[in-house]
Length: 375
Picture (cartoon, rainbow, N blue to C red):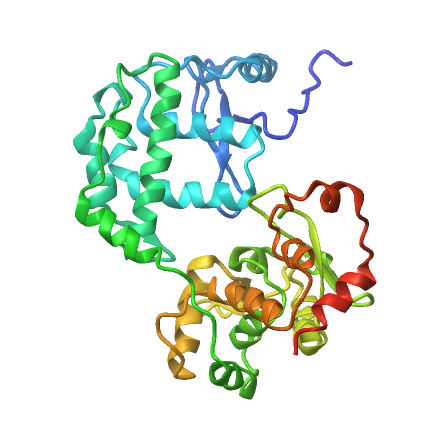
């Protein structure tokens, strides 16, 4: 290899840039990759303790050494640096994309911790993140809803467990903080049981299927996908020839499961499939961004807003939530006597019966026959 040839960094190792507009003895700046944004772009920080080098190859060697064992954690690091290091570990351990997105969304409500030294963070700061915080979500200021508050608490518990394991803090103030009873009551109320749609409500949904939002609701009611599973579905997951879609998340039983596309929703699925190809999107369901006019995929927050709007304009029960479509699917399966194991397979629930789970093979035609029992 020529002496001055620059070696290329492996993906995810960081960045090296040369600062050319200043007379520096060490013009090569090394940045480490500590995570990704919700859009998949790398988040970089200056390499510590030294970030500037005389030559490219010196910076390259430093980054290689860093990636063997990421920088030493100290109590002087900021809350944001601690989060990114913990997030990096979480990512390497195989957390799902959905879980990682939820984690970043929750961290947005913890901005008061970003520039604080880890050793200075106390229970009152944790409390402010959960009870008094605000974050910019889709360009608008938002206060965390009850369930979001619980997610923030869970993530802070985990982050400071990580800090405690490296002796960065003397105690986990997040775990010492107790959510007040009035907040627990709000969370419990937000976790009320899901409700099925009435026959009249289903007729109203079928009476107007022009919008993508209406189509998504009906597709979910006849397939059992979780809302986020439907949002994340790509056109590569849809087999139009064999009429199946594959996806899933959350549990081993729920991942990469194939569900036959019910004959009543095939036109709706195909319609969105063709639209996605036409606009060049990899995702099955897309919407027009109100500000830019571009066609973009859904986020859960946007889908939730659109879902509530459909409930309002169709004059359906305002208490309905996106997960109610999944409840509706199971209700329909039971009503039309779909096989119990087929239902579990469709919705991604674990089958505890060893004989069924390990010793019984079911082909696609059998599953299709079961789902077509639904009328």
